[in-house]
Every structure is written in C-alpha cells, then in structure tokens.
Amino acid sequence: MDETVAAVDIGGTKIAGALVDRRGRLTAPCRLPTRAAGDAGGVLAAVTGVLDRLAAGPGWAAVRAVGIGSAGPVDVAKGAVSPVNIPAWRDFPLVEAVQRHLEGLPGSGRPVVLTGDGPAMAAAEHWQGAARGFRNALCMVVSTGVGGGLVLDGRLYPGPSGNAGHIGHISVDLDGEPCPCGSRGCVEVLASGPAIARRALRQGWRPADPDRADAGAVAEAARAGDPVALAGFARAARALAAGIAATATLVELDVAVVGGGVAGAGEILFDPLREALHSYAVLPFVRQLELRPARLGTDAGLVGAAAAAAQALRLDGWS
Image (cartoon, rainbow, N blue to C red; front, side, top):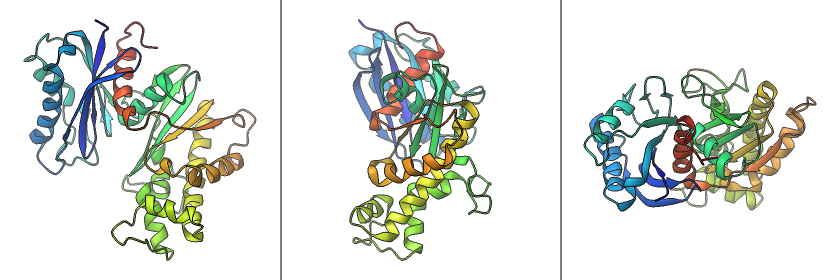
C-alpha cells in the first residue's frame, strides 16, 4: 500500500481532513465545523473527530505522519497555535494534544508536524501547483486576510516560528489605516476581501443585493464597468504589488503565486496587479518575476499540510 500522510486543515469555519499520497491525491476527505466561538476543548474535539474518521478507514494503516495546517499565528517550535479567527485558542498546545489523542488510535507513534496555513499553501503550490519547477517562490492567500509562505532554494522556508512569508503584515502605507496586528497601512488592510468591500461602500458603491456587500459583489460590479469597483481592485492590486516587490527584492523570487477568494475575481485583480508590479519591481534582479494564479484551490491546505510534513520528516518520494 502506498504510504500517505494524514492531513488536517484548520480554519475559522471548518476543519477538513484527508489522506494524501505521494502524488498529491486526496482520499477519504471529511470535514467538521470548527465552532470557533466555543471553548478550546470544543474546537479540539472537531480536530480529533476528523482524525477519528480518518483512522476508521482502511487507508489509516499506510499513514506515516500527521500534517496539520492551521490559521495563524503559529509557533512551530512550541507546537502551539493562536489563530486570530479562533478566540478560544491562544498559545494552544495543539501538537501535544493531537499526539496524546493519537496514542489511543491504531498504530500510535506517528509524528505530528504543524505548519501555518500560508506556508502550507506555498508547499502545496510548489509541489503540485503553479510554483512547481521554480526554486524561489512567494505563494499568497488573499481572502478574509492576506497570508503567504516562501519557498527558497527549492525548499519550504517557514522560519523559526513558522510564520515566514506573512506578507499581509508588511506595511505599504506608512500613514494608512490601523491594522488589527497593531501596525498601520498593512497589505491586509488594503487588499483583503473585507477591505475591498469596505472601501467601495465608503466611496459610494452599493451592492445589487444589500445582504451581499462583499468583495465578490464588488468584483461583479467591476466586470460591469462600475468605476468605484474598478478603482477598489486597482488600489488592492497596488498594495499587493508593493508587498510582492518588497519581498522579491529581499530574497530574489522567481515567481509569485496568488490564490484565495479575492483572486477568484480573475483578471479584475490580475490585470491591475501585473501593471502595478511592473511599476514596483524595477530593479534588474526582480524585473523577471513571474506572476501566476494559484491552481489548487480549496485543496491547497490539505495538500500543503501533507507536503510540509513529508518535507520536514524527509520522507522519500514526496518531491
């Protein structure tokens, strides 16, 4: 039986799980609601519930490791997580808790590897997606927040705490709006989905459906030629381009991959993003930087959690 990694993807609304093989294929997918407003034990119960479902299937015997991708911040050295969108988990010892639960499942003793959701997405896109074949990549998620991860010299680089590549909290407007992180003018407060919708509403845009004042509705308006909606995406694109160019200047990237719900706007985002990147990435060693849309979609978290775990444990055949 081909060896697999049991992958768990922890987000604010759902906890997903699957077995991932060496070709990036998912089997036995399952999910449970996060219940992020509940207590810490309730959220953990959803994680262990997903693992129990995976362990109950015939593929569990081939599992070599458990890879967990979590919304952050994370602290991989401590095995702890403090997801912004899960208030009950602050410095929560997730790896220890999962290891303790695994002791009661068949074939205990499997290692557990924690990865932030941004680095997990980067691992996935580098292994099976739009960054495949590139030595140096920034992979970004632009959605409710803006996150990312780095691949440097062909390997995932999560950094000592597991948060390297968190491009959403690069400040690109020194006099800009306050950011929940405590800084000001961060990429996230300019380019996230809520930021796009918030600015469009302030500028006079009104959604056709009053109950759907989100970035997706702004994108629809932009496709129809609404000037406020178009300007909102252009502004978000400039913020993203400034962050990408700054990162590329620091570490000499070959490619930047952009995914997430806001990237689903397609060329409404990517056209002004390419134009803005051409203006910001001007030094000779960053001019050739490629910009690509992500390929793996909602599977990226699971594929990336497995890929990051396999790479950390140096499993054979996972590259």
